[in-house]
Image (spheres, rainbow, N blue to C red):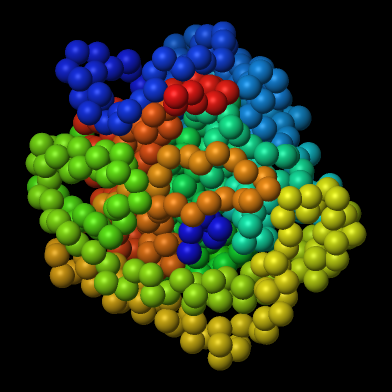
Length: 538
């Protein structure tokens, strides 16, 4: 499958600047950028914001105000990114209360007072709606927070806004355009505005990259965290299925769905993952994660984490773009320089053999899971089944389907129950090929700590008429297996960022975070977006 199912950093100077030059293939530096005023929280990570609050330089309310102003200037005006669907009307009051609590009792932890944006498929029982970008769910306010929202509130985070996304998490049509929803319109890439942000967690990644928030939450079934991270020059961490509860998330596939962090640094991803992970009785998959999660993944942040690590190169994911390949070759050299033992190649023998069965499983699970979710919504929502959503879309074709249809919905509706032999066989095939004969086989054969591959290619031009084109990507093996995957920026192709992925066995988040952090510290490949209207390549 491709994207259809997926489908405070210091300035670098001296030797660091020379190093970054090796990770920018043909960057188009002379382009005319949009003129925007300086942002005083520029690239500030969670630790920087906490130190500023500890010193009394900022309060949580002031930080929240600054991000709201930034959203108003850049998202709704200026470059008009369309990454934010809805601001939390209570955000400033929540931040004020957290300031009072800090003064009286101290901070709850590293997320105290930190503004977080949630993808608009995560339930929040507040004055914001949860719609998956669809007008069919307009006005839907769930009776209970998602597990993710609950954990963020408990950690003292300020839930700032809901992010735009590919409608229904990009599982409505084979010819969809990533980043488009009927509710939010077309989300735009902050590096080059006529380029696509990838989906389905497009708004979450764009908001983080453009500094409309500190950090964000995305969700992934196959590529929907790592692809937007790749296209928008940020870090995306897709956890092992079961590490983070899916309760209260508008679903696609219970065998592959998960929420995860989208951040500007690996450190922030580690902090956020610690707050999100844990057992939840509402999600049986989290039973397997008992004893495997931790509240603090920052212990794994070792700048020398690559030293002595055995890293396998999945060459089968190369070859779709020569400049991406050159960035990857530079990355392999850098990992060796950092002391990693690079095993090359370590291809996954079953890659490409489970695309059909993956799609089949998603169709079955989507119908069953969505029907269950919709039945639990209140009377303000008129649609209570996939069939009723299909009918709604037909009745409102002019606004819901002006560019592409709902062929995937129709295929899913035609599927039977989860007791069907067709479904059970496809699910068993998926797990055998992606796990036992796939990632587990390669990891064991070569005694690897992680498998490395390009996350994807540079962002394509958004095309609402023809939809997304096909291009490279390496998300499917880890996605179908339900295994963790982290993408970090690796460099640029012209003005467009691309990422590198580290993935491995189930519950290997600590190892992947360690390796990704070490790579990030060695390369410092992220560079802020300049909001170019287009690229002049001639």
